[in-house]
Length: 334
Image 1 (cartoon, helix red, strand yellow):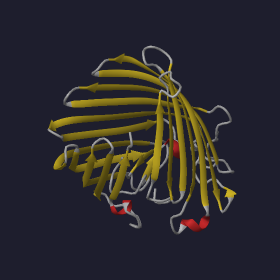
Image 2 (cartoon, rainbow, N blue to C red):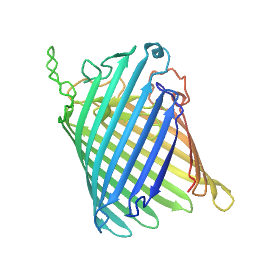
Image 3 (cartoon, rainbow, N blue to C red):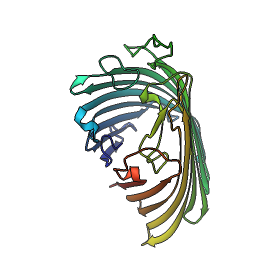
Image 4 (cartoon, rainbow, N blue to C red):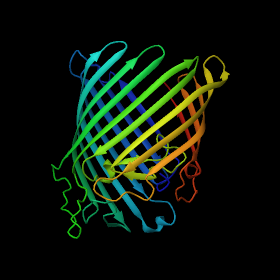
């Protein structure tokens, strides 16, 4: 996000068969000019049917560096850790159906001018948010030589346990204030179709529905890379939302035996709304644009997207993404 820096750098390292029992360990670090993030996970199988137990940890610290808010010394830190049990029910060379159960703990602290302060909705008077939640997920993937279809469904329940954030309704209006007690559903899908040699059609969809107002860390965001390109990251943040994207990747240049440059026209659309409270002034985004993707074997991938907003929003156009440009480079040494 431009508020903590538009250029994001990072690396991830991993070790398969870490202890010689089919387990894996990964560690990642990313940062911007105003943020630092550490993530680690460990996964170990526990039965012959590829059931796995995963432990995860994340720690993020950030500071707003975007003018004119940088003079307010706004800082935030967050800690999250979780445990996941995943069990494939159907597993063949062309199809997989799996169930998983995840327990997560998220802790966030905010400060203003060095003093703890409730900057986000639902935080206590010390700027703290504590969420304990359970997630039940279902994943289905179908593959063939010409296409891949992947669907994912997840039910999320905030259980309000372990000193989690609890809020009473607003005394003036009686409206509910978001806290750690919530229920939501998230559905995601992706269809990849091979139309011709190295010509791919990619369709993506994402939806969230919530029965109660949600804390910001649980809300549905629109805008930016991976969402509606051409807009600032998380231009819109609400309780519910729907997003869809269509992209065609066409080869225009071959480089050696393994390199390729692809042209990728795309269209992204999304709309959002809140539960039991007012919607933002702009709650829908749409864009059309063009991308260029460079692949050099399995080790190097670079991507440049230029999205043209079809629905105007207020922004400073100070950064690349606020001018519709998104650029990423990935390099793998293994």
